[in-house]
Each structure stands twice: as C-alpha cells, then as structure tokens.
Length: 334
Picture 1 (tube, rainbow, N blue to C red):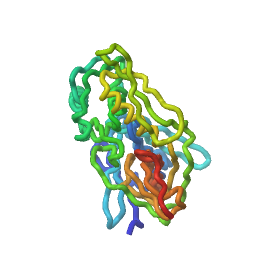
Picture 2: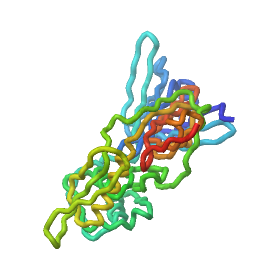
Picture 3: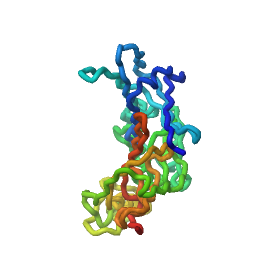
Picture 4: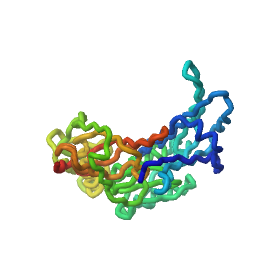
C-alpha cells in the first residue's frame, strides 16, 4: 500500500503554495541523537527566479506520508540559510534548516554547582532556565547527584556529561530537554518497540566491524573522605582489551560504580556498524532499535539506529546508520 509517497511543508504556520511541490527537486531530513541537531535541506528548481525565498529564521514544518496510509510529523526546523546555484543544467534554490530546538542560549557557557540534588532535579532547573520542559526517564530521575560542578560549560555539554555519568542519552527534542536511559529505543523519552526489517525490504546495505579500539573495561575514580585516598571502581565490557579510565574524580563509591558501568556499556557498543537503505519508513527515528532478519548470521540481529536520513525526490527512501546496541551486538540466525 505504500506506493504513493508525499511531502507536506508549512512556512511559519502557513502551507506552501502548490508551485512549491512542482518545483521541489529533493527534500532531505537528517534525524540525529545527542547534541547533533536534526537538519533539513530542500532543493528547488529556480527557473525564472519566480520562487519566493523564505526569510532567515522562518520555521519549516515538514511532514511525510503515503496516500491512503497516513501522515507523519518529521520535524520543525529553523531556516539557517538560503543559497542559489546556476549552470548549464539550470538554476536551483537550496533552503537549509536546523532543529528549531537547538537555540543559541543552550550553547552559552556558564559556571555553577549543584549540591544534594537528583538527576531529575538538575534537569528541571536547566529546562526552566531556558523556558523548556524536562523529560527524564523515571529510572534516571531519582539518581542522586551529591555534588556536581559545571565550569564554563554550555547546557548542552553539561547535560550530556550528566547523561554519560548515569548511562543515559541526552537530546533536545520537541521543546524538551530529554534524558532517557540508553537502550530505551527512543531519543524522545517515549519507549518504542524494536522495528523488524527483512532483507527483502532493503535495497542496499553495508556492515563492517568497528575500527575503534576495543576496551576490556572502564574505571571511575572517587574520593574516600574517611581515608583521604582516591579509590577506583571497575566495570567490564565483555570484550578483550585494556581498561579505560574516566577523567573526573567522583564524590562517592556509588557514583563511581554507576559511572564505570555506564562507560562500559558505551564501550561495548564498539562491536560493529553499518547502514541500510530501503523504501521510506517515516516511523523510524534515531535511537530506535532495529532487528534485521534474512541476512547472513553476522548481520542478523538487533542493532540501534544511530541516525536516520529521509530523502524525498519523487520517490521516498530512508537510510539508517547502524551501531551496536547496549551490551554489544548479538548475532542472529539466517
């Protein structure tokens, strides 16, 4: 039934005119995780120079869908630039936008500290400061933060550091500072089931071993006030290799244990990567778990969508960049 794809675009809340669609050459949306902003690029045929260029700062709302199936909200973007090109093959206008949530005030450095707080409490304070909401996984919200300092760090960097400490993933989505547990299957705070993709659905694929160094474990330091000594907590990755020691000294044994475990989980994902391209799947998002079936055993199994690119150019395709999920890649069956 998914044989009639379409795109819908609105600028500053107003649907674009019909001429926009007749001039649209391609629309490419990139869905990212963490601090990487989601991006949008619209390329239009600018023959005759009759198209009105959107203003810098305009809001682009983009939806994809299939006739007789449904429509999916893909993202809200802020126009960052409009460029024009010309040559033997004609003239084009390219409209480039970034996630409307990645505001400049989130990138401003600041110094402060928090005492006897929780992860949820700190995230709420940060969100309130920027006029946003905080969406924190319940299993992470109650995690204690006896003391944490922020020295000349942006909110984006500081929140990412908190996420790394507790084994979470931080992002800014839908007007919210989102902190979810890694492996929840979503970068928006909503837990979603894994998406199963058969080999017959895939037009192109590439899978390879990850060239990054393999670590056998992670180590986190903490200061023991009773003895006045620096102690070390360790966590294993299940792989062969040296240990990786975290730089910051933490304030308690419990914090160090959790930080070492979170880092070991992150390192364990260095067990494979790749990408697949298939007919457009507007429902797939970055951080979602993907289960591949019908390939050879080394490819089959559970993966994580590290990023997703949706491209509409008359036809509609989706490319998913893959990485190993929490705990490392597990091979499946043929």
